[in-house]
Structures are given as structure tokens and as C-alpha cells.
Image (cartoon, rainbow, N blue to C red; front, side):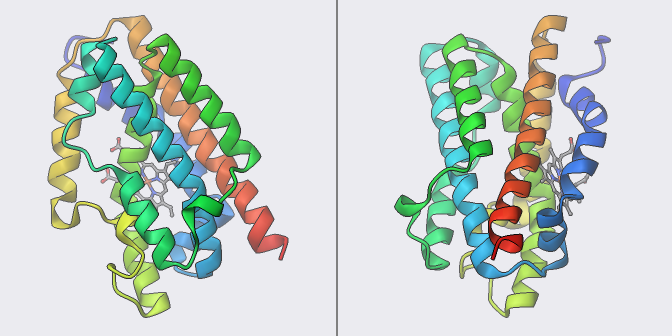
Length: 216
Ligand code: HEM
């Protein structure tokens, strides 16, 4: 990594192809087009609840244990998306406590736990992917509101947690993390974490799509 290249710039460039692959999954395409049925959306949110909940707990744990100063820098002033997910699930008629994790979800949760035990900076790469996805989620929220004739408060809060503050929140996150100096092996761990999270969300999307959209 050169002196003036921050980790966030490297992540954006290095994962551009993974982003393209993630957004081209059938479930993601239906989300973007606003054609996903509401029960399928709720089922997908149920899986995301497992993921966000686990990542939030792992990050809280890193900050409490002070495993690396970058965790407190990154995990600062961001929304606890799991709270919004729980509310949205209830608004969609799905009891969060009745959702079972899919195979791809279970495998990701195990990975997150392992990283957490190790104090692995890969957790920051995982956070980058989920937090970055809020940039596109705003547009998905608009598409679903139009398709379902509902407003954002009726079960779509996860997709637009910051409202008009989205760009400011994202820029502040980028700047904070970009300002941290990581050595090459730390940077590689973060990039590996982002790769794994991108792929895992793709796998969860596909498994969910198979289970609900194709299977029913
Ligand atoms: C229908 C699906 C999707 C659409 C339409 C979409 C769209 C977008 C858009 C418009 C941006 C902002 C680009 C910019 O301003 O530079 C963005 C950024 C991002 N999205 Fe997506 N996205 C989708 C799916 C996903 C998924 C499934 C993930 C994660 C698995 C994801 C992760 C990210 C990340 C990490 C960024 C930040 C990139 C950066 O600036 O470093 N997106 N997306």
C-alpha cells in the first residue's frame, strides 16, 4: 500500500468486481427492480439479522478487549442495523425469533466468530461491505416503496438508516478508517474479510432465492 492510498480506496478498487457479482444475483436484481415479493424480502431480512447481530457483537467485543485501535475508530457512530432489522421483520409479519439460519448464513457466522476470537481485522472488511451496501439500499428502498405502495416507515427502515445523512455518514466512515495506517498483512486481512463478506451475502441471496422464490 502506498503512503497516500488509504485502505478504503484499496477496498473500493479491489472489490469492484465482487460488488458487480453481488448485485447481479437474482434476488438482488429483483430487489433493485422492486419486483421481489414481500414474504421473500422478509425471509432475506431474517438472514441479514443473524449476520448484523453477530458482527455487531463481535465488534463490541473487539472494542471492549482493545484488540486493535482501528476497531473503535471504525465502529463509531454507525447505526445498529440489527435494531432496524428486528422492527422491519415485525412490520413484515415475521417473528424474528422464529427465523432459522440458512447453511450459508451459519457458515458466515462461524467465520465471524473465529475472526472475533483471533481479534482479526477481517471484521473491519466485513463491516465495510455491510455499511457500504447502505449506499445502494437507499435506491432499493425507493423501488420497494413504489412497488408495494408503502412508505419507508412500514418495514423498510433497514434499507435507509441515515436518510439524508447517508452520504455524510459514509464519507465520515471512509475518512476515519482511511486515516488509520495498516501494515501490509493487516491491510490484507481487511481485504480478505471484505471478500468473504461479499461472497457470503451472494451465497445467502442465492440460497434464499432457491428456498423461497424458486422453491415455492
Ligand atoms: C440491487 C443491488 C445493489 C445495488 C443497486 C447497489 C448499488 C450501489 C450504489 C449505487 C453504490 C454507491 C456507489 C458510489 O456512490 O460510489 C453502492 C456502493 C456499495 N455497495 Fe452496492 N448495490 C447493490 C448490492 C450490494 C450488495 C449485495 C452489497 C454487499 C454484499 C453491496 C455493497 C456495496 C459497498 C461495499 C459499496 C461501497 C463501495 C465503496 O464506495 O467503497 N451492494 N452500491
